[in-house]
Image 1 (tube, rainbow, N blue to C red):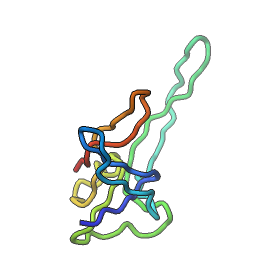
Image 2 (cartoon, rainbow, N blue to C red):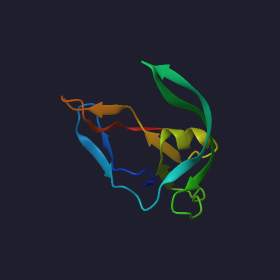
Image 3 (cartoon, helix red, strand yellow):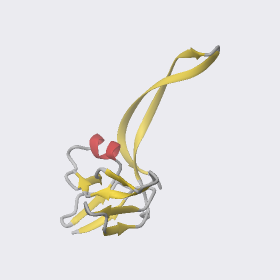
Image 4 (tube, helix red, strand yellow):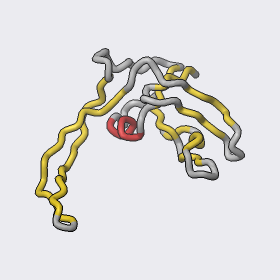
Length: 115
């Protein structure tokens, strides 16, 4: 299977013992979800009005304006969890699995992929 990274960062897949199984460099394009925000009443914290909003997510789109790639046998895309959840019909969309951190708390990879 060919994996295409459609996220804005390198994805490193590690095993449970921490060894690197696969590194996918940042791809040529990103798949994202359309976002619509609706402003809400601010909340007041220590006398400061903090703006708030609600958000809804819509269709998946390609960040460079191109077409979202069609399903092709043998090709899968690594996308954000949000994109994967927005397109449940796309069985070729995977998102990074559980995050793995080093001793200082910095992310070093993920345990597999989530479908």
